[in-house]
Image (cartoon, rainbow, N blue to C red; front, top):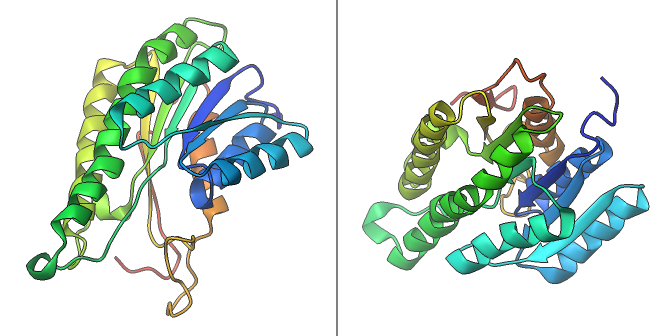
Length: 242
């Protein structure tokens, strides 16, 4: 397919100020999408927009704290306002702490649930009417992709609440997939260890994934022909066992 296979579409990417979200934003823009980047850090978002535009793409920044429901829904509304439509939602914003239950900080557990689960629900709920409307256009389909984790399938000590949120978004995604079949494709990308500013790969015993690897997976889901829907894509480093 042409590198401009997403021309005429609008994609909203959360957590787009760094790491996986930034890589996804660049990738979708290179494929022709107008990209709305959402995160808390205004300066970082401005840099991402400038870099995309410097490469000939189109991008807009919408600063928002997605743990605030009004800001989450407002970010979607602003994206539609500035771009006129919404074809693709990429729920990427997320956090994770290693927290053994006996010594856990309850506030950090709550924060994990707010950004990894509740923000996904709020953004998706706000986006769905616009995605359904976009699917009635020439492309004939719209997409919701949530960047989950291998932790949504396999638990590990210290990741109880993180894994719980990832299991939850998997169940949520599969249920709405069945509700929206034929109009909005709903998929998960579930990466293993990824080298980002939120992780420390310096002491890893094997080579971790890079953000672009995950961006490639997201792009694969949203560039399938209308007849094909990829519901789950599990992506691990070659040497990662679990």
